[in-house]
Structure formats: structure tokens, C-alpha cells
Image (tube, rainbow, N blue to C red; front, side, top):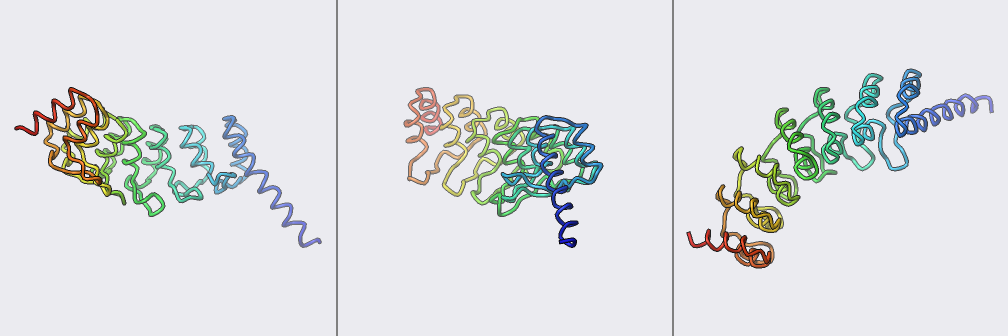
Length: 242
């Protein structure tokens, strides 16, 4: 019993620190959080959802908590239980300032793994982030033509997510327009599906291929007709005649 007692005390203190870290993160009690960290409260802990303190700080774009965690030795590359890196959630949540801190501290801007289907941060930023965030990633060397398992580049992802400003930026900066995704998605088809006239005009202006078929064998014209948008149909019909 005497041998077990010290172990139990350590376990209880360790568990208490873990719970306190998450509780103080939630209410943004930075004074208590730093006190816990100063007393060597473990930062490599997971909550009931398998998330780490640093991962949550990035998700909430809580830069004060993030800096405290890093100051007291949190592993900047520690993955959550499903294998996702903090930079990925930062890009999904558009946590610009937190992503910037991660990059400044050496996180790989092109991080990927099988658990993310080999998607990179720029893919998530193109779907759920902002143009400002995309530009930050590119500044640190992100691959604008990265292809994960589904073969969809950031431009294709931006089109699919109806992110006009991001898609326009990629077009203006020479992104490839002849990309075909794993499921036969292509630039012009995705532009048509947004039902955004300006998006379609952009794709046509930058010579996205007109002669591709989707996974069901539908042509560009058939997809345009399916949009039930008269101006899109006019634009595609005119382009096909040229």
C-alpha cells in the first residue's frame, strides 16, 4: 500500500493539472493557466474528444494561451488523437494569427499525412479560410499545386467551396486550369456549379478546358444546362462556338 500511495498521488495531481488546463483554456483564465504550466502541468494531454490544449488554443485563435503553452514547452507538432496537426485546424478555422505563430515557430507549411488524406494546410485554407491566410501560407512556401489523394488542387477546392476571392487569386497567379480530380472534377465544371457568373467568366478567361466530361459522362454544356442559369448557358454556348 505504501508503494502504491506515491503513484496515486502523482496520478491525481497529473489528472488535476490536465483538467485544469482545459477548464482554464475554456474560460480564458490565463493567470491560472500559467500557474499550472509553471508547476509543470503536462501540456501533452488530451481531452475527452482527443484534442490537446495547443490544438484547442489554435482552433479558438487564442494567441495568449498559445504563446503560454509554447513558452512552457508544449510540443508544437503534437497531433490530436485522429492524427490531425494543429496547423490544419488553424486553417480550417481561419485562425490567421495562430497559424502565423505556428509558422514562425517552425511548423512545416506543407505538412501532410495519411490521416489527412495527404491534404496540406493550403487545401483547408482554400476551403474554410481567407485570402489573407492563403497568402500567408504561400509566403512560407506552401505548394499552390499540391494534390492530395483526391487530386484536387487548392484552386479546385476554392471553386468547390465557392470562395471567389481565393479562386480569383489563384487564377491571377497562374494556377493550373487543366486539373482533373479523382472523381473527374475540373475547373470549369466546378465554376459552373457555383452558379456565380463571375466565377465562370474567370474560368473561361483563363482558358479552363471546355471538352472534359465528369464521372457521369456529362459534358460542359450539359452541366451548364443543369445549372438553369441563362447567363451561364449563354457564356458556355458562346465559348463552345469559338
